[in-house]
Image 1 (cartoon, rainbow, N blue to C red):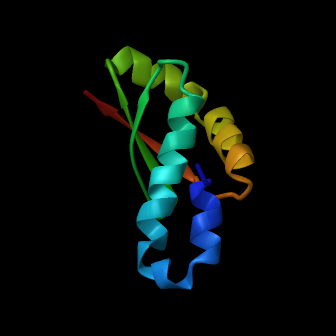
Image 2 (tube, rainbow, N blue to C red; image 1 turned 90 degrees about the horizontal axis):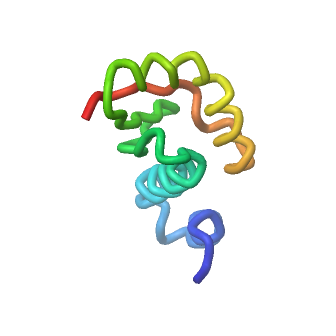
Length: 89
């Protein structure tokens, strides 16, 4: 299967789908790095929203948020994620 990032960059007809595809791609990467600590919910305008199980989990991840952002951006290859918002689910 072809990588979403390659499809986004190559297909000019998919320009209007660029943001939703990018969001899906970033959420997929975030989920792959989550180690079952959170679930990526959405990505928009540099803000990644992740679902967590409790306030304690959110607080623990907040301390690590800069490292999480760095790992995601490194995997994406660009500085797309600027902030993380934690949502209790």
